[in-house]
Length: 403
Image (cartoon, rainbow, N blue to C red; front, side, top):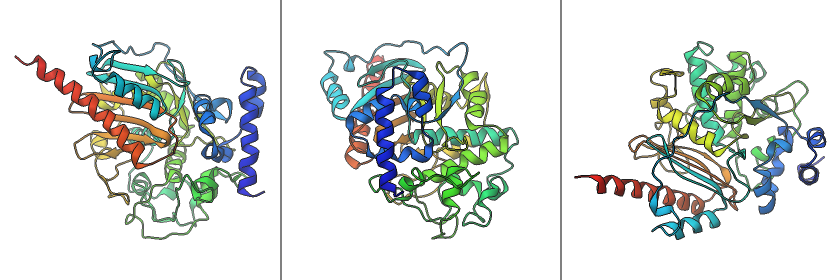
């Protein structure tokens, strides 16, 4: 069966799942593994707006258990400029409408300053995070190092993932996976159904293999490890496989035990799995907007649970600084985080998903959306313009309070 035929079949399955949404028992029997998830790249706008809010009814997932007692999000003084009739209310409305925003949340000094939902978003809606999940997976690496499950970032990947032995990943280190500098050839073009990212998510794995391992172990090397950065969802998927192998537990369980339950996330998250039950470490973790905001606050506060960090002391500083220059320019890439020159950093996903963290201002901005294209400079500029405007309002407040 060709890739296009597989995608056509998957589209049909999406339609079936959508019409069966009121019948949970029937939905579960129709859910598909991650190896059929390339269909998401072919969805129209209506399908995105519905599908991003209900991925666990379409694809197989493993549950990340939440806390019995959620961590409060204390209400702060509302950002007046964004309230109805405020100075920025009209431009905020336009941003939400034009960027197909499902939800915006702003935490400042740990308090909720702005929250708005649209499309199919809402307080209890689990929204598909796409590559925002990469930054969460990276944090689990830090936790696994802190707990002694991973010895060093200089360890070879094949020490933990036996299925990659004899492949182009033979001499690649854990750090090179985290920085996407393996040197293995890869094409992450979301608009090309023959790209590696599309083919990986439309190809059943070899029997007994994790989907990503099955696909990438056949790829050639194009550069020495550590010398060339190429954005690869596959490599964060491999990071997830590695963490699971090192901790001897599913990635979703590890996330629940280290962060989701002890920090106080309010609702279970759902992590897409492949044919053999491996979570997609580089993608596909569905969570509420408030819990995404809580994760941002967790990182802002030093990845601490009960006052103690769950990662090594220098981990966050290293993870969120420039480790390698990127082919697209900009500030570079860290350990699955996007650092910016002003000291802020972000988790980013296609179709506009964003988690922006500003340590200087003690600010977290979380955005869920179903943008009309997976990537694009206009989308990025518009999103950054909104973030900059929020900061300007917070700075203006601070200035006005000075004696």
